[in-house]
Length: 507
Figure (cartoon, rainbow, N blue to C red):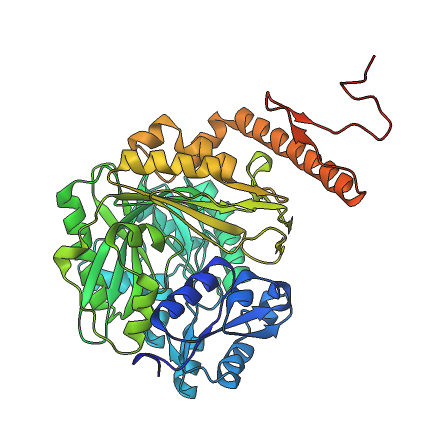
């Protein structure tokens, strides 16, 4: 064991989170092996890893979601621990159970806890018994339209149809009346079945313009449970988070303290260990309701790290190795403010159509208070098979105003060419007056997109012109022609063709 932790950790993930876990292992002095698919052979995590092992072809089912291949990779390379990251198998109770059986420590909660909290209906029941407030809804699943109609009349329209398994907005539909319920119920069930292999759904009341606020939990095997602050994740598109910040703006101290205490109570009721997140909806009157628990590290964990100084991934590893949480609750008070933008390979001007291809240019921002978590480099090929996340740009400031100013600077410095990406969209979004006031809700982005469709179209046209210009420059370079240069006024000036008159001899 290295430093009293593990002999070697298998990182069963890809992209920026694989690199993030690798760096935490390096800081702890723990060797790490990166599992990768054929499509990620040239990824930065693979290039930087102590060891790397291919677990299959590009298809997710045959690589990152292939449990026999993942377990074999851990055993063959001599790993005694496995970090699942987020997504893929991160919340798979069967993987955690197999790890236990073969003597590999799963860096996360116990299999039974993953299974219990991954079932949203069961999680709601458990939280109800623990006294955690819930959005009014069904106590279990609804099996057919008749049951759904009866439940909806009791709860009151509008209602939200939600898949019992999984997340990410799949298997989720809003029904504002009986006719919509009739149409949307089978759609939600079919989508849940296709995405998660489980078509079970339940109903809960749909809140109008709520905020999405979540609480980061750390819990060890010695009975210590800490709420490591809250994050506002209200800026979403189709239930996918785009911007997160900590602490949540415009939240009273009384509400914040109650929220954190409630999250700790919920984590204790679940017998939770390691890092996890309880997610809540916050209504316009300041009342909050439990939504679900994610039994893994969150994509947006860097904003919590920025305001607490904790390395949450390192703590995941130390907790899994049996170390106690030597934290002082008073020291967990947030210092300053942090905001994160998720830059994805999508074209915001074309309804966020996914993009793939080779990154021609990558310039990461820097300077005071700026952190970038990314696996990009110039020449890296973004594969079409996986999540579109390219980079997380995080800015910290002594207050929210300074954090946003630094975020604007960072986004302006960010250059990613060769694939469509959302940095231009984020630049516009964080400049929005309502966002600057913290007047946000889960429907904010949809309304913003409706208001600014023309501006986004202009951004798309500019990006297309830039891409065409870059392609011409690459073609000229390949043909041996000199590159264009910048004139004194900033215009891009192409060099003269061989034999063409120059400015000096043009008569």
